[in-house]
Image (cartoon, rainbow, N blue to C red; front, side, top):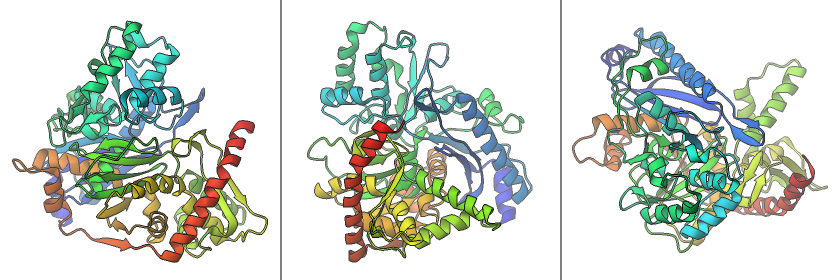
Length: 532
């Protein structure tokens, strides 16, 4: 599409919008007839640690969503000379999991407890045993049960429990619904029915019946929808909430709201059996669509679903690029103090490309990049630290490699379990900020997992683009057309990608580095205990 045809397409209200609330950025991506991005806007934000709880204020949610949408609207006008007044489809996605409870009048009952919190260990342990199904600490049901164990005063007033994506969707459409992939991070989903697991819901209700709260679990969870189903439309109030200027018209059809896992799968065409993807940013998670169930319950492996309900093994790690970002800030400070003009982009490029030049095992430099708790390595808090042996080769290349490889160490430990289970993967695609520097992150991940890693040209767009694709599927799919078919035929038929294969010497080097990473974990535990 050329600029004049794109302008007409937008003016006719045929463009589709995806909005994703990530951990550090809220991004809006508008796509055209060929599903390629044609405009975007974003807003930077940060979570807060308040009274020991990682949270975002809901006022900040709307400030960020409105700012991202306003930036998108300006981008449209600058590029094409038209105002964005009408959309063909819209979808909201966000960080999965967490705890957002409301009463019958829509009042928030406690602070938003995000995925990053590791305060639900007891609840997760009890529910995993009760269900014979791994319940991670960050799941909504773990937060709810922990609140019950804590005897929190707001529980009798609970009327509606949702996620961040579900909350934003609810305020824009009036519908309390979730896509099945997002729902599977609140409570276990039965892939046959594409709904919450009824047996486990009964077990939960029986376990808390003596509390006398007056609600049943399924009464307070959002309704579950499959990809492509009607999830409501933009209300007049919702239009004003998204675009306070009043330019945007109401009535836009919505896709079911999804989590960043589901949008990542969609953006990498990894929704079919034996496909997988790795989404790497502030957190990192790998998703593999399974042919058959795993042999047993693993606390390191989450079982969730694709946006169409297929079972997925998920290795989720709370920490990925935060420590890289922190050290990049240190280097930026050094450059400024030295009177040098260096962009953050140049700093990241230098770090990632230098990582390829370091010793294969990082030369005795070990990075433990845990800003917050990391359940995969059984830690409820984090203390980012770098350790080196007395004879370590502390070069910039080894320093950088320890950061870039260290960001993947926890993920590798979880993915090694799937390798031992002989899970077959035909393709594994990477997306997110970790892959923005060409080849570097892709190569180190390939060596970490001993698996070829592909990155598409659209990898930098990631989840917001994936949500836009789900919204396009909602409004454009043919009768009976599956999501897999739609993506293969309409979106990725001519997609360009690059693939990097592991190198055996580098694989062995990363293995040695990982053993050092594991050996450093007792020191990390000691730091957590003694450094407050």
